[in-house]
Image 1: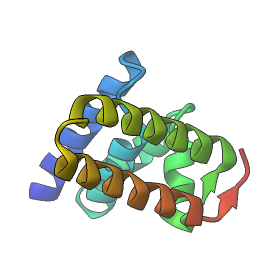
Image 2: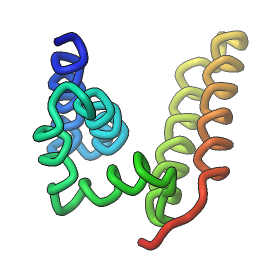
Image 3: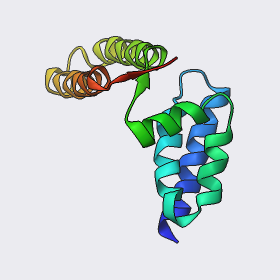
Image 4: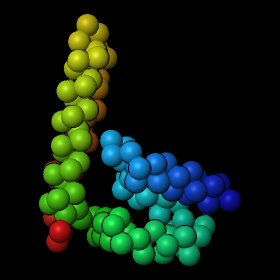
Length: 118
């Protein structure tokens, strides 16, 4: 029950990214598909069937792979986030260091994933 509710929450959060280009879709839908894996396989399959995001979600969940295009998009978004964080947190060094550190951890994770087809 909780996994299913979380699945719908993350599905909705990912849906926002379809309309707002700066909001991520795929990562929220990966989490939603993981929540639906046992609680609602039909919803997981519905996510997999979405033409634009489904194949990427399925490949990441089943094989742990990211396409080169996905890696590039993720790294671009992280670079943009680092730039915005630097501007906003310039006077707050501890918070800036934390933000940049978390972004770097995410970047290392993305780069370390095997590449699948685009």
